[in-house]
Length: 349
Image 1 (cartoon, one colour):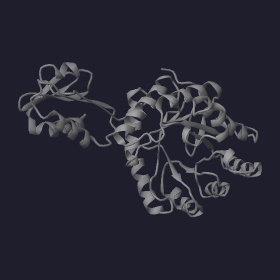
Image 2: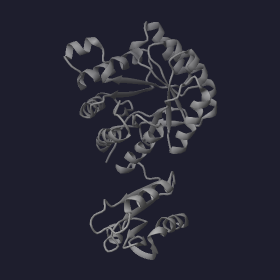
Image 3: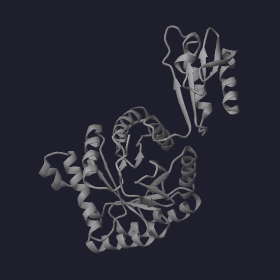
Image 4: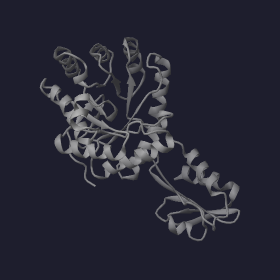
């Protein structure tokens, strides 16, 4: 698939848009004022593969904590700010790489100008984030409901404010908890601007439901070439957001690194505890960053052939199993030894 060409915006030491890789974002759920806890969480997210992190900045104490946080982490930090331009100015001063703030919501034109000038001086982009749950009252009344057209008009109003100040380092997000509405909104905005798009389903739910909704919404847009950075919003450990985001990118061919894991759904021919074996293999692989395809199959007769494109895998039999590479059997081992032997072979690749 061919990505829609957008402007390239620098965020810290990486880029969003243009020909740059699609990045995976997350947001801390610690109290930003607690710098130690926030740093610890971000370092864990870095290990999971997070490219950009966002922190809520509800008050000046949180903004001051950013000074220490940004010194201790290794990925760009986005300050998430609502309404208060003073928090934006302080966050810029304290070392953030980007702002998430809607210029139309921070008061007088002079306040907006101050934020735009400070951001421009430091080379800090601004993400405009429109959300279906906070659409302007006037737009709700005019359109009669939340709809893609209203959401896009809201985003373009904020864009106009910054463009009139000669500020163009802009990233746009238009999020909704309704997947179809979210997809249509991004389709529409992508036809109207060339700014990079931050895509995601907001308030998507728990890890199980949220993963499904996010995969459908984000995946559909990516398959149409829409999207430059993604955030999977889940009610749970933000590390799970990063894992899901990475898997979405792998599934649609935008990420070639790391493990691709496939396993069969099991059937009446399965004679080993394949479900437990698959889970153990996946858990033990952890964040292995080898570019490798691994298959865990339940049928010793058809498994190696069905998974011949895998670099290495398991095919189960009756109390035993086969380990195969590229569809060719290399050894037979007892069921209890399958996982250990597979891991050894993977490490030797």
